[in-house]
Image (cartoon, rainbow, N blue to C red; front, side):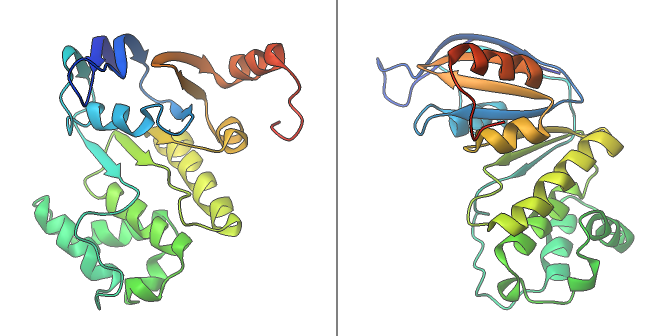
Length: 223
């Protein structure tokens, strides 16, 4: 469960981007965050991850183990001759985990074990994203947060990544929070949708969100 209480945030003092936000996100959901560019989607998840500090208010998180899949890993160079296994081993050591079976298990969950000795730079964008999700699974997180996982990924790879996230939610009970720009994908895979607009946030079940869109106009090409 994530409780956001009376939260306000600004990058520049006096110019609030988020104001008096109150929000309760249940555990066990697959939540997609939708909004226009500049609507603070990524800002919200950075606040949840404590990478940014609110001007006022607070965020309470019941999950103890949280993993984050950013659009781009810090200090990651895909041209550096690093294998999949080496990347995951480095991360597991940082977490104090020495059991290599955990790495194999994470790669199996994303169907990438056969690529564990491959160089990261030789993988497709979709394969790299699955490796980064495997990296996030090390440590057995309760909550996985992703920032636009389809960025730089072709449509074929998207059809592999999103069912994988849905499976992690359905079969393993992982709470998934994903920033999205594609409404159609959000509707297809999410249990809940958070719509950010003009600094305000509205949380819907996916069915209620579809009904909300119907009230606003035609849905051709969306559902």
